[in-house]
Amino acid sequence: MTSPPHTTRGLPNNMSPVSPGSFYTITSLKSLFSMQHNIHNLIFDFGKVLVDYDFEAFFSRFIPDQQRRWTVMTILYSDSLPQRLDRGDYTFEQLMQELILRYPDFADEILIFSRHYTEIVTAEVSGMRTLLTQLKSEGYHLYGLTNWCSKVHDTMRQYDIFRLLDGHIISSEVHTIKPEPAIYQCLLDRYHLHPSECVFTDDKAENVEAATRMGMHGIVFHDAKQYERDLRIILQHKN
Image: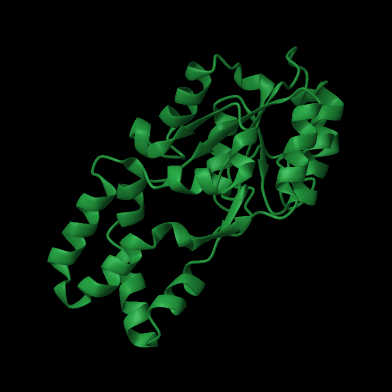
């Protein structure tokens, strides 16, 4: 569930990052921005882009014993459980009950995880609400595209940054997850977006690469300042 190191895997040979979060070089911008469409839409992942989370701090708080803590974390983040939660083919509660039946010795810890799940999110990512407010005032449309289970709505009610979005796609509601092409297409179709008019950002490079294959522009996210710097480079050459 942590972000992988930055990669340029899948980029054309003449392209390398402008910075650790960008898929563009100045020398490649001329050909990259030869398309007619201006940028109108900015698309954001949720976790580690709009809001931050800390799994280790969460489990340390509720499970003091280190050995049990690491065992529980292994249970919860193995067997593709995160992907199953994000895909939404089964409810959060159904999957938690399945785990309890499979690991009865850790039923108490699994119940703690279930009852306090939203407390994994710790805060809005520093600087992002201010930046989104500014971008919205400049006339850009803001959208969310996230891999998250149904519990995401509790988090969205907690943090004001989500009120700035003009729309969103949540993986568990459309039963497809990033980096599968279908989830990007869901966003484009629902809000009638042209991919070349969109900039997508995510903390995971493989999700950004998938967006660029759909025709969007992409930025791998590290922090608000780096994102704005890379975004302004794209906007300068597109708009």
